[in-house]
Amino acid sequence: MKSRQDQSIHKPFRHLRTLLENKRLLLAPPPESKPALQPPLTGKQEDALFIRAMGDVTPLSHNRHWRLPRRRLTYESWENHEEQECVAALRRLIETGQGFVVAQTDEYMEAGRPGVDPRIPQRLHQGRYAIQDHIDLHGLFAKEAEPILRDFIRHSVQRACQAVLIIHGRGLKSPEKPVLKAKVFQWLTRNPLRAHVIALASARACDGGAGATYVLLRRRPVPRRPHKVKSKAPHP
Image (cartoon, rainbow, N blue to C red; front, side):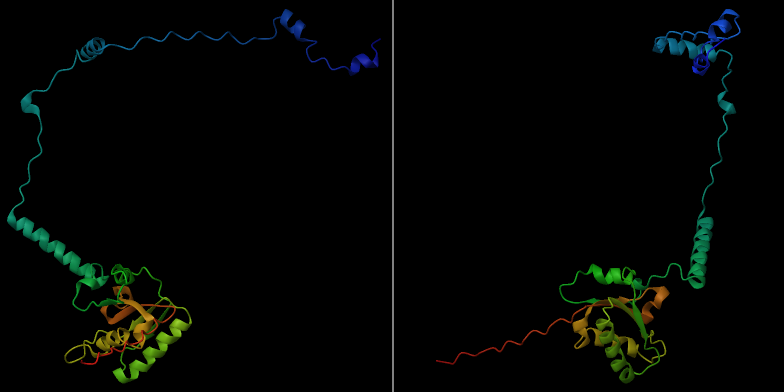
């Protein structure tokens, strides 16, 4: 009779010998030996293999080569193609405004304070600065628009606005030149508003084009320089 101690001992390989003796346990086959690496072929051997592989190939004769017909572009076809491109570009310009560059027109304007990098007005026109506020002066007379513009610029500086948009229109209904547009440019480039302005440039087409102006503001106004009094030396 087996004791309880013998039954409690775990013997996982006690039946292994019986299985091996009865050949009921299939062992994995031995790994196959890898073939020895062959040395690389020489140039002559590669040529010989290529000639042997191409032995049954019949080369094409010269007259069986197919060539693409050359299409000559005549002056009439070139002129029609250019006209179609112009019509397509004009259609895109009218329908979506694509291709219109405000900076390449006579209505474009820009300015910067002395010492300011000349690339800043260009970046301002390209929309590199986020517009934080805007005002619409379109339809107002110059006397009405000037105090409104001054209050707007001063409030924008107090609220730490960096870039603003001023809508003044293109002045197409003016008999000679755009009055309000020229006045806005004059007010922004002269005192007292000049002390708050770093640069200005005409807006992009999506923001009004030549009928609006981007203005880059200073957080603090430029202090006025005291005028130097020239002293004249007395004549001897």
